[in-house]
Amino acid sequence: MSGLRIFMWHVHGSYQTALLRSGHQFLLPTLPGRGPYGRGRARTWDWPANAVEVTPAEAVEAAVDLVVLQRPEELALAEAWLGGRRLGVDVPAVYLEHNAPQGRIAELRHPLADDPAVTIVHVTHFNRLFWDTGTATTVVIEHGVVDPGDVGPGTEERAVAVINEPVRRARVTGADLLPLLAARSGVPIDLFGMQSEPLGGVDLPQQRLHREMARRRVYVHPVRWTSLGLALIEAMHLGLPVVALATTAVADAVPAEAGVVSTDLDVLSAGLRRLAGDAEEAALAGKAARRAALARFGLDRFVADWNHLFSEVVR
Image (cartoon, rainbow, N blue to C red):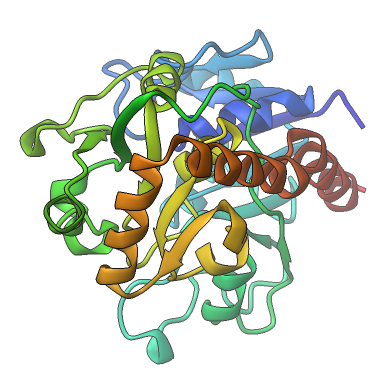
């Protein structure tokens, strides 16, 4: 299926890089200053020509086949940008839920719970299990990434972690665990990610980031509670073995032969020390990680799942 005109805010650059491979034209709201509700095209990813910026004046007149929402406030924003067109009535809409629910789980309901007009798309089965969406229609489309190539693990006996906004997100992302794991294992852990500089991290464009990741021997995923990180899947594609907390969807996504998955810091530290120091074991685990990533999180499956949903929603 091809040829749709899809209205969608630029929220998650890595995710949208993969979604753009579906071949449809994506209309990206753009405002002066390019804040969170007007970023337009990405500056740090190489997006193709089907990512098209639109101003508010252009959006009002634009032919739109489908709206993809990603934040609760976009429900009202999209109708305003599209000249009062009602979501799910005048124009089909889906809500892409990137996140696991935050707070007291038993008391949380999704912002679109019981909404009969908008399909909710979860990125993991774990997220669909934990979100209360009432009678709303839900589907799961697991992550897919553009394959960066099999280039790891690297020769440096170091580990790498990628965490965006580790200060603001703090314990949720497990940034506090990196010094503990480094101290217990004796393996330096290099941090990358947006706004990671206060913790000594570095923010790099995606291609440079992949090259830096691949130089290290092990990928560390210390996240306590969030969706399955795209950086973890990218690391597996790169052929890096994984040392990860067995939380949220990780235990289901990372096979035992691909590294060490546990909630015991001693087990994780020992695994990190062993993989960083043993190039042969790291290479074997990295190959298993890459096989698992290609089989489950390949781009072809991801695009096919989205195109199937698009055809169902706009039919």
